[in-house]
Image (cartoon, rainbow, N blue to C red; front, side, top):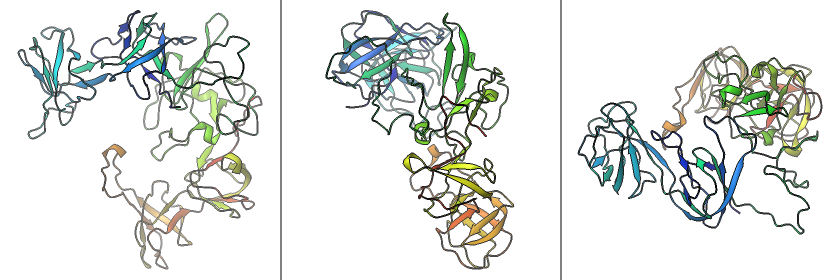
Length: 486
């Protein structure tokens, strides 16, 4: 069975920003048609109020998909358009079809709103013009040919929206459906060997007690299980209401998703500041941002109040997450030293947990050294006082590093400029960094050789091997018991 990718009803700009598809419709515009197929059951949300304050329980009606078209597209004019034109240049023609209706402009003096119909779909402009007009030689594309002549002037960068052909279904909808309400293809089905004995609400828990590879799994068993709606493992808000429906407590985690329910001071700014939110239990990347590719379920970390029951109405102050890092290099069974990119969370005598799944083991920290692990980008010659490494971002000046089995002091570290990942083109050379040493290398070390900090020395050898990026944490989650955040 294919995965039903959640999407939403299309929200167009400058139209709307909320449109409503009336009851009795057999088609809705959607943000994505990914993994929606003819014959699928489709759940379409309804009943939202705008501005949308979180509903207690999601409401859906279920229909059957009869046709899958194109999703909505948001683009921008990339050149000025004037009255009488039958062609507009735009930043994207993706998912636009002949016959689509497009709304142009906003209702302002000298620039009226008008609707036009697509007669022919051409090519997009070389880029959008949000950072300036197209330069000489930049391809404006052939754009969209229109059935009607334009009535008004329309400026470059004005947003345009095409609803797309969306998803058709049967029977006709019983309720109104509005922008941003959820849409989900119900492609999973379980056939039972006997009828259900009672009714079950949407979002009730469905689980197989024999499955040990999904959801929370740990030596301390959960005393409560939560069904749905599904929570993002990256960022969302949680609201606790009393029996009367009044908000008793609330939080945002990962990012400020719903500002009205996030408790605490929001004035702090700067690198790595995301507002007053509960930190999510993700490993952090070298850029300081949380890495959503490492899921909570894989490393079993938790955010919780500490001490239990503390409530200062401040999301940052009230909640803690176990201290955690990832192994910067693999380690074999029997070894006593582990390499990590951050040693600030550890101290001698501390009990830590290394690895994941069935290979996790506990160990006691003997001594704490210096962080970092990388490899040489080119040969390091004997007599040289500097080395070229693939990544020096986890090292710091004055720390002890190990090169070719010998210890040196890093007197300075020069980090090469690193382009954002979306600017990197195939064939671009990898950036390299320079580390200057306090003394000359006593022997040559070949490219690819290890360069690392001294890491963390354990009191006893490891029983199992552990891979790079395996977690190292100070405590495991303790559901139903006092939180442990040392």
